[in-house]
Image (cartoon, rainbow, N blue to C red; front, side, top):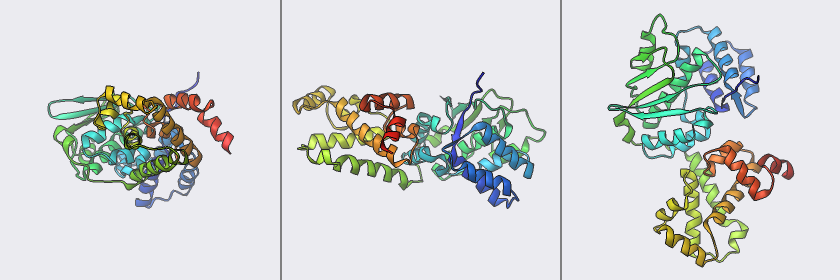
Length: 333
């Protein structure tokens, strides 16, 4: 029977390296391992857990996973970090985080519940039962939301699926709130009032990505040869925004352009266009550009193009090109 594997972003290795550097640990072999792993695109959770265990052998401190994960920064979350720092409020950021959570941990299923005084985020790590990994996973989420609002406001409470340690005070001191142990899931209860706070960070890298999207689509040769009327140009621009927001439905796009759905379709029909073909053409051109550039994985490209799943992107690409993204890459090399 094949063992299930989940993966974490390769950028999480930066957090481990940062901790090793700050603690000035003698870890030559571990550093070499981290450097070698940084050449791949992702790391499975079992391997990542083993790396945490190696750090523990060097410095066997209680709640070590919390200490390491507390050094996380939004940029360590890769594309997801860029996506959420482009939001205006913490609520929007956490909603987007939930939408793109599989970029953080593959096959991750999170549950969000709004309670009287807290917004509860619950999730579970599959495939590995490791105390350090649970601690790490809990605090990177806390550190992320605190970084976004630039305030060290502790959760209302948290929960960990690990046995209660002898000294729970260390956990409460680091997390700044009550801690429940032996929980069936990881859980962070964020104060409800934080949801409307503005995001204090702004990562220009994502803006650069979408600016490149716009310039590529709106100045590409085929489009230069078209006789653009303002409506079609505005539509292509709005499609870029829709892909960023993850909602490319015509019903959403038309409202943002100031049209009813009926008048929107009529306008397109009168100009011998249809929304599906314009959207597909935009996605196809960007997909080929991203694949050739090699900066993003297929999963990341899927989300950049507004798909909720990688499989949907692969199916669409095969419809456009007659081959899969992987086969396309081979053909252009």
